[in-house]
Length: 243
Ligand SMILES: C[S@@+](CC[C@H](N)C(=O)[O-])C[C@H]1O[C@@H](n2cnc3c(N)ncnc32)[C@H](O)[C@@H]1O
Image (tube, rainbow, N blue to C red):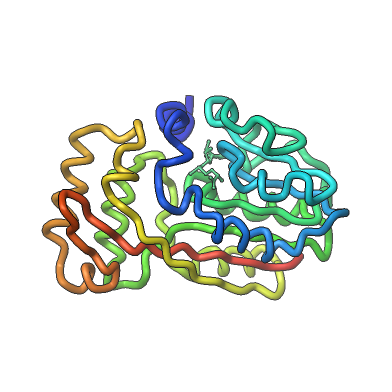
């Protein structure tokens, strides 16, 4: 089993409440809107997980396909999509030019980007839209500590993303009209740390990193120590483009 598959096997049960952004309806609706999908669209949701993004499209478009590598996450995705396919994003079992829109939230940090982005380009129809939403660091000031926290949170992560990274990868793959939308999510560390997949040792180290963070990090992330919790304004970047 791949590292990511093991992580999501352990996290699946609690996934739908394992962060504020996970169930954030405003964010989910924004992704739908940016995809420009309509009643005739065939949509692919990459790294669909428990189907929270796919569900927003289900019934509003012609067909929603979810793709993931984790059957454990998919067990919680019942009634969210028309079809689920188990395969890695780096090698998708779809013909060229299959989809009108492709969306992915918080999936490509686990993927080999140099394979995944060309695959997304290949299976999207000419004129089709891609919408990729991922947590990033803000800038060079918070980069080192934000990535250290992400590494302790999920060792299966392959990519530590800066705000421009997905847009650059899309441009390199040949997409046009590439744009970034920034979205802030106020996250409770107590909420996301208790996801079933983080060992106690890593939880302790994460809390210690927040406590000892420099003032610049605390300011950028608007860190607040509230009762026994820590609040962190995290940055999600939604990269959109057209093939
Ligand atoms: C953080 S969850 C995101 C789930 C969903 N997109 C959402 O926004 O709620 C990440 C998902 O990516 C899946 N995943 C990880 N590596 C993958 C890969 N190489 N190909 C496809 N899915 C992958 C995991 O199994 C997991 O379900």
